Image (cartoon, rainbow over all chains, first blue to last red; front, side, top):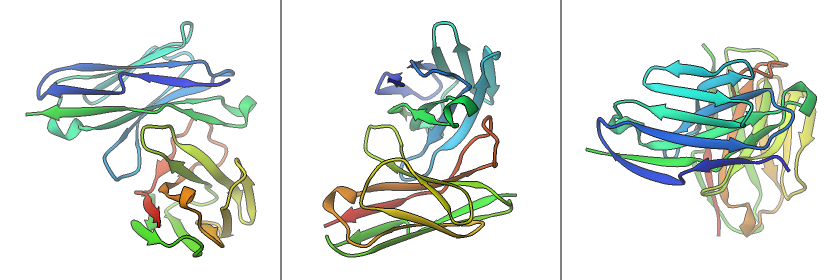
Length: 114
Length: 114
């Protein structure tokens, strides 16, 4: 069964500190892995999309890594800001071979405190 | 630039009443359109998707239906709401055929069935 597991479920960090979120998946076939940021009461917003051949990708203070062999990804937030408080969702796409089906993780809720 | 509008933002409806949620996309043509439901702490669940006018695919059997009367309009409906229909409903679009393209989400509708 295709699954995307995220850890931790939630975390609290102090403003200015770094943190790393984890995503493990068992989706097959694999086309790409996406990270989304979802503010409370809003729709998710795309942060990165990584294909099989990409190991790391950055978007401002967010850096995503992908190890397609171990089926693991991480999202690193550098120098956190209060506006980083949100849920971060990992999504894996099976691509055309899987009818472009997306499997969503349950998200990691991040709270940045001053 | 492309924008997606979803309304209403919140809705409280009694059991047995009808439902109509509307979603429109601007600035793009022939998008893939999606309806998702998000339960607290769980991954997004795909309800319906559409690749063109009048073309609707349903992912899970349920009390809801969807329609696409125009290229950039997607409607989620129910004839009689159940308590279990409560949740956060998200509309999204993506580039037609773009399996490496991100989903662009609306800001969601919080539906409470009482």
